[in-house]
Image (tube, rainbow, N blue to C red):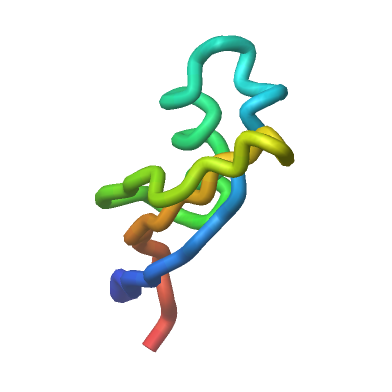
Length: 62
């Protein structure tokens, strides 16, 4: 098995964070793979969402 890296962009709801944005972002990223690094690149105040860009790894079969 090999590791594959992916650059992804997701939107995270700021309404559903329960006050802990870091946990909400990491939970959303964990659904797509193991996050190596991530950054909030945009916040939409009207929609109450944050755009997150991340690099994640997944297992892949060659």
